Image (tube, rainbow, N blue to C red; front, side):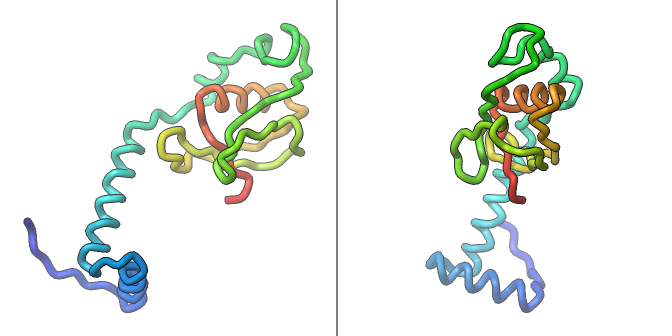
Length: 140
């Protein structure tokens, strides 16, 4: 076990102390728990494979979007997981807006994308995300 001195700003020390009290831990244990949690998140993030636009375009050709016949540009449903409510939402019911895209395993932030239900490219992109298990959040 390593031992060292750690200097913390007063406001950070107070926030950690308060957090430790709420969770019935010592300050030392609280800092260890936070560091261990952070190390686990780093490992999960390293195992997450981020997508690229090229991969999305190759995986989901325009003519195979569910909800219509090949070549038909109408799609009635495009379900994706909402990272806030943990429920599926139908993007086709939503107006154009910006979404934050989060990973599949631990939902860390990947990037911002704009949803437009009238754009076939947007439908294709979000269909690939939904099929791959990514989550979206409209409030970020």
